[in-house]
Image (tube, rainbow, N blue to C red; front, side, top):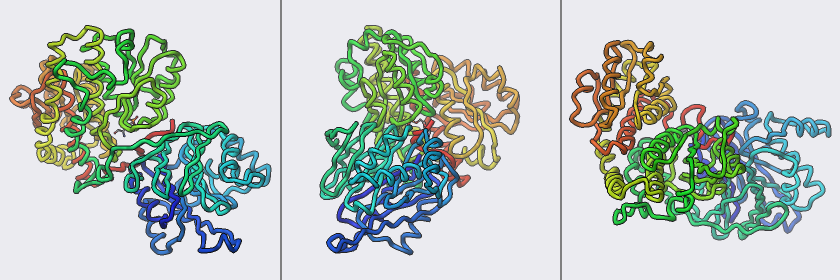
Length: 621
Ligand code: AGP
């Protein structure tokens, strides 16, 4: 969704803001803009008013950068924005910041009562230059400033009139030494520097300048000065201590890789080592208590686990559901958060809701969690981004520690979620006495070996590239089928989603047993069918499904364990994965699917890290 960066301090702000916005490019956008408060030396002493420069451009950030290079704007206080259109087309007039009177406003989110507010403002004679809901907020602040002395109070008064999700940052030439930042259900963090302060939609935008962050609560309105941050909540001043983030600036760089996605695929072994670190205790064949966000008492008393998530996180949650039932023997179900929140699901205080989300900000997951909490359920957040919204609502957090994920297509966060959910299953099983020490030890030992098994799969990257070229790009494949059973079913779903989102090839993930109930009609000599068939109890069944595909001349790309001959014999292409514990196969089978999608997209020349129409953090419904 939209990206915001604000700066106040002694330095010239345009390059800080544009570089920060560049780090947020992964959020997706269609236009960009900047507002800079320009105070000429000695102007205030002479009673001169500051200038407010607004520059906007449609398209990629480079376009804005070009305009700023040609015509630099001076100033040390400013705010920038990348827009992902919700209200109104991606035009310059709709791009943020929106300037009304002395005030410039950027906004991420949706003001739900924009229709009635616009009508009221039009009736008061206000003129609108854009189709956006944001311009309404700028008018409301401008009106409030006519009677309020400070930008902080005027913004509070204006925001009291709007409903919806928003992160808003405001600058004004009337108060050139202040930035106002407000958050309600849309992400916004404050970066704390020395003699300078920042606001941004996400941590990576500011890592080059600070590692100390304040995570605003919903309803907070902050006043940033170069030396001081004041935060108001419901009219009262509140303290929000800053937290140190251990992500390094280089983690948010490509480090020689062609794309962030490729880098993040290759980072998976390390990401999983970080997820496991300090949590797996082989000596006791257990998971460290206090590390998973669930107390022993809750682990014992829970009657049912409901996993809620969207997209890729939903696929991890399906594997999690299987593990929680097979390893911990707790009844478990998995639901798309976007559906769950709108149906009359039965939830009560005996349920443990596990919300799985890379960003921790996904609007549907957040809303579903809040609703379940109201109905008495306990909430566990399995999340990558520390301080994000979902863990703040939850009773406990299990951070995946995968490091920043910049590519829109999730890869390392997916496998880190798998590791976290597997550990959760072991933890629940050990607390409830449903998992023996012997089986737990074996699972955990094998889990600790997973990073090296994944490194082995990554050595097959060249094979994946050739297969992608031969079977997906050279043949100009338009449709693909991904088949899997058991734990390979969510992997088939994930493989299909990856291919769709970055290469724009239509793909379906199917439980292989369902193929004969419909999709088999699609199979012909043009159809690549990716068969995910690791060494587990489903192998023979899926080998039969592969035969059914071959009998209809489908082109099989087989993901099989080393030493497999049965499926390899009938497949056009074979990609081998190491033989791992049957419960752990998703960690190795997903990697070739990520690589196939990556290379297919790269060979086709699509925008791998920022696929069209997609956003990394989906903060609207
Ligand atoms: C993954 O490749 C997608 N970009 C998308 O499906 C994503 O997983 C989904 O939007 C959920 O995001 P979250 O994990 O941040 O909640």
